[in-house]
Amino acid sequence: MPKISIIIATFNAAKTLQTALDSISSLQMQDWECIIVDGASKDETIEIVRRYANADSRFRYVSEPDKGIYDAFNKGWKMARGEWIHYLGADDRLTPDGFSELLKNVTDVPVVSGNVCLAHDDGTLKLNVSKGFGGCHQGKLVKRDLLMKFGGFNTAYRILADKDLFMRMKNGNVPIKNVDVCVAHFALGGVSQNFDMLWERTKENFRIYREDKNTRWPLLKTAYISVRSLLVIWKHKIHR
Image 1: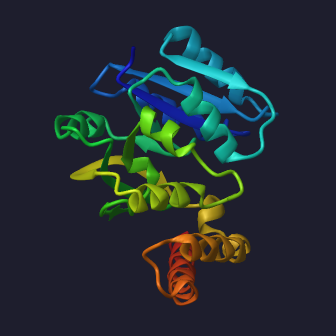
Image 2: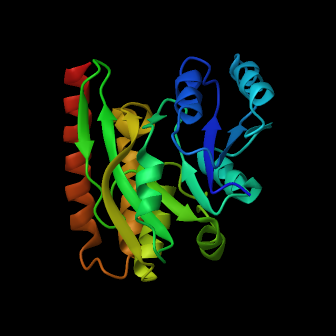
């Protein structure tokens, strides 16, 4: 049984997927499997995946229509055989030693979290330090049993189901350990960096904060987060 199951959700990801898969093949630790959950891509995504699966049996895949990225994420952890689950974007890449360093620091916690390097289009990197359940999901390892306990991702959220899941874990007093090591490079872009999706993100943030037991002023906090998101998107546009 593999120690870590790396889940990648794909849809027409042929332009970037090879970089992500190469970074997995280059991991220092060898005790992993990678599950690609594809949403019936129309480009060469599956041809690329098949090449890796034929060369290394640790790569597995399924390709069928789905209901979005979090539906694919749920399929992934249900297919997984590993003790730990990690989610990687099809345009992201892992650092060679990140998982090894995380697992050195695991004791009896069900979630361990490292840092993520935010990658701009011009090649510059900015470190995103993980604090508690904050930060990018690309930096986190979660026990499969814990995902099962919490029912995985709530697919009612199109954009922030990962934030909702980690908020539920936080409110459930799930122990987490943060480790000062860069686990992955996260490619800025997509819906998380898109002006057009900002309103949808704002609505989902408000719903999450409204249901958060520890947030007294959900509307105020949503406004604060939305302004921060707007500034991040604006800075990203300048870097491009």
